[in-house]
Amino acid sequence: MSNVQFHSDLDRLIEILPQRITKYLDKDSLSDVIELVLDLGRQPEIRHADGNIDYLGEDNIVEEDIKYITDRVQDFTSDNRSGIPGTLHRISAIRNRQGKIVGLTCRIGRVVTGTIACIKDFVVQNKSILFLGRPGVGKTTKLREISRLVADDLHKRVVVVDTSNEIAGDGDTPHPAIGHARRMQVTQPEFQKDIMIEAVENHTPEVIVVDEIGTEAEAQAARTIAERGVMLIATAHGNSLENLIKNPVLSDLVGGIQSVTLGDDEAKRRATQKTVLEREKQPTFDIVIEIIDRNTLAVYPDTAEAVDCILRGWPVKPEIRKVDQSVTDSANLMQKINKLDEKINYANESMKFSFSRQKYVDSVKNFKKIYIYAVSRTIVEKAIERLNLNTELTKNIDDADIIICHKSFAKGGNKILSIANEYRLPIYYVRSNSTSQVQKVLKEALGTEGTDEPHHTYIDDEERALDETKEAIKKVLENGEDIELSPQNQQIRKMQHELVEQHNLSSESIGEGPTRRLRIVGGKDFKAS
Image (cartoon, rainbow, N blue to C red; front, top):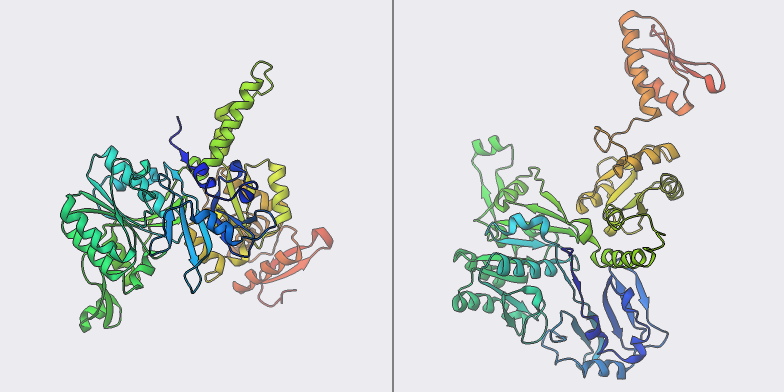
């Protein structure tokens, strides 16, 4: 049995939708769907995880469609949310100025286990953990799995403070996804801070799980809980630790910030101005984890140390943890494996299939998506086909595992470098849009060609020519004799000329056509041509 399990209760969601909408739905194609959007006077939409949008039919949503759905779900709370009891699906309403519902967002809730395997060693340390990340990257999914892990496997008393039933689903019985953890419902978001304190005072928890700490009062409640020795697992608004530090409302979660005036000697020792920012107190959370995407996490195992480094402008490098590729696209992987099983069973007697299930699974797990920047897509696609590589190109950097970029964009300050850093993606450079160069970089990026060189360094014709030039310059400086280099094209010869001039030597181009090359002369009286 795989450690990846997938469950979405799609039938329960489809049951509350009008038949004229459901007739366009194919459950097998909903594995990557995030939500269904139904707005009055517009076509119903299906929104996928990759950002793509599909439209269901050509008819617009009418009032009867909205009423059909709202009559089949529980009453909406003050934050305009409802749900389907026993599932993780969420139904959110948009109202007009008179309070009438004119739009619905049906968010599909899923349970995906195995997504915290790469950080399990931190979860079992009995330290408070704060998750950061933009909406839709899986923060709540991880809270569910941690709740189950700590309650069932570590046998701790866990209370989930569930605002709008976001973590454990709608209804009085919490969803099995949280295991034996207890759930306290929060009727309105503004009461979350009170329920957090009530949980500690009334139910003696060892662990409290909270989704979306977003106000100063909630941050203060979290500090109160931590000071009582209770382990906190929570998420907060903000994409990164650095952004959280700059947030005056929530910075207390990581120790708070204060302005300090240093003495002359201390300022000189630190090589800073006299007025600096410093951490005010011990962080509420011992560990901060940035969720870069659904499969990449950046872990700061010591929040206090990381905050101090950021405030002083020192480099701080988090630990990058990757969810196993089998979890990356669990639904599609299991679907492919199941279909493969059917084919193997069907063809077993006639031996039509010679490959094994494990080989197929391994190929899916090692599959990589590449985002290219300033590199010829045609050349890359042909190289992938020619080399039969287990990869494909993606136009969405959110889906990418690797970035391949033209070397001319390698200088600091370029947007692609910032994006690669933000998403913690490895970036590989090609020096030219030549087939040989692209093939070489693809092999290295995908691990099909072993190398001890750093991933951003490549040996090509240009580098070999310059290395030859450097060696020749050294010999000319030692013995003063002229040296002829290997034939090169005009662009490389120009770089060779410039390199020679930097050493106060002279050079000339000799020969014709494909034999044209550089001669380095020992004197300083010859002007480069």
